[in-house]
Amino acid sequence: MTQATESQKRGIILTDAALKQILALQEKQGKNLCLRVGVRQGGCSGMSYTMDFDDIANAREDDEIFDYEGFKVLCDRKSLLYVYGMALDYSDALIGGGFQFTNPNATQTCGCGKSFSA
Image (cartoon, rainbow, N blue to C red; front, side, top):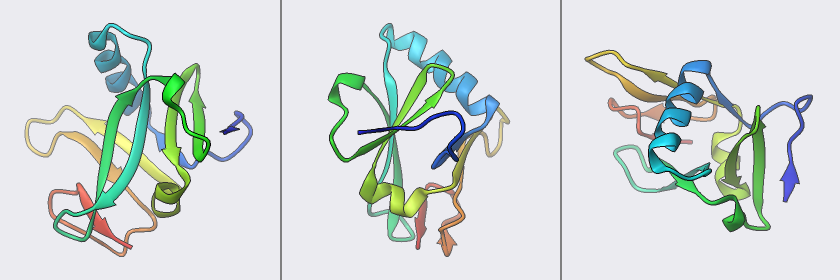
């Protein structure tokens, strides 16, 4: 496992709004969990984003770990090839709200913003 330090460029960027929402969701889980981000085949454009809480004890050897003031984000290296430099944001707007992915590696994204091709 590779521990990212504050001075390193983070492979996945969380905005303040996204971090705040993730921490609120984590608190509802009642456990000190980290966030696992990745990609899988599927979705309108060929690949879709995945996000879920996970226990840091489940970190695998091929995971990159990014630290956000004590909150950990995990991403396997294969997924990181597709999402490196991606910004994860959150909006509570009634229309178009929720988590939004801004991926510099995406050559095409679907209308919902949850899948892409690279």
